[in-house]
Image 1 (cartoon, protein in one colour):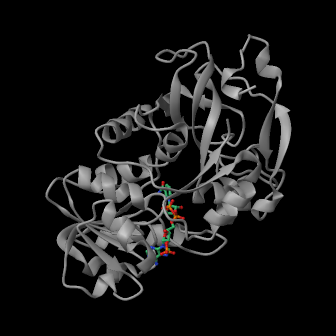
Image 2 (cartoon, rainbow, N blue to C red; image 1 turned 60 degrees about the horizontal axis):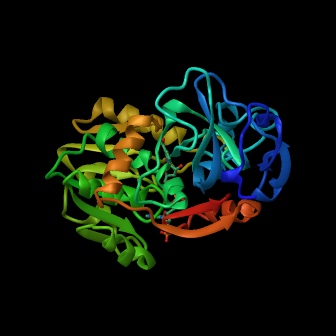
Length: 340
Ligand SMILES: NC(=O)c1ccc[n+]([C@@H]2O[C@H](COP(=O)([O-])OP(=O)(O)OC[C@H]3O[C@@H](n4cnc5c(N)ncnc54)[C@H](OP(=O)(O)O)[C@@H]3O)[C@@H](O)[C@H]2O)c1
């Protein structure tokens, strides 16, 4: 029987489901498909029959436990993963509601951020991190869209991007970048996107006004100056990034490269220090998925201003293969897991 059509009596939450389990940190091969107990929603949570989940670089960090610092975060755990089932962004159907939940009903089609547990037939999601599925998207597309809040908050909130401004997006072809190009355009900006040769046409198709192919040109060497640089790669010295900004321009670090131990933390620290000594704004942010921003994204999508770019779709049993691809760092758009 199709998971979404299962009747869910009050006692059914204890029944088994198929899920990807994460017994220890390592390459994605540590993951396997198993039968586990279906989770039960807490008072402020919703139980979602998962139709699709997105497989992101964030999920790859959680599974590998690298950078090691992630093991100290709520997503990690020591000495082994705190959460048995990984997976964050999802889309599906509401099948049970916690006692305090209002605004959702059984049968609602939703998308959002489970924080963990999305690579499963059922996942518990805080109602505050869930919104109605955009009417124009399939479940697979909606699961991809749930990863887009990073682009919205990075540009609109951290970057304070306004209509008419010029923005440089470094890393425009990946999971966040493909959304960032479209959201920056929707906010009325002039967009210059940085990507490799194979992605130039795709990124242009998303609406970028100009595209810099980093294999043949250096964005920091050009004469153009930007009100905002949204950096999804963190591969250039901050002095080079400062050079491309207008005198009152803003640099937003969404990523920071770095090694296996602290990952981007050194660069993000340097970003904050630089903001103290520079006339330009240097800042960073951590995405906070909220129902209101998921709704804002859905409105953009339904207005035809943004759409997900899905490179590959894998069945639930192949999450390991999906994350191995994502972990290569060469994803074009996003990778999605089909669950139901
Ligand atoms: N701050 C936050 O709260 C937050 C939230 C979500 C994600 N993030 C971070 O944001 C970053 C981007 O996430 P994502 O989902 O977009 O990652 P992603 O999907 O893994 O990005 C991969 C893309 O980057 C391109 N790329 C690789 N090297 C590049 C370079 N030197 N210049 C330009 N493009 C390059 C790749 O294509 P080619 O190899 O063909 O160039 C590929 O298309 C990650 O580091 C992630 O951890 C931060």
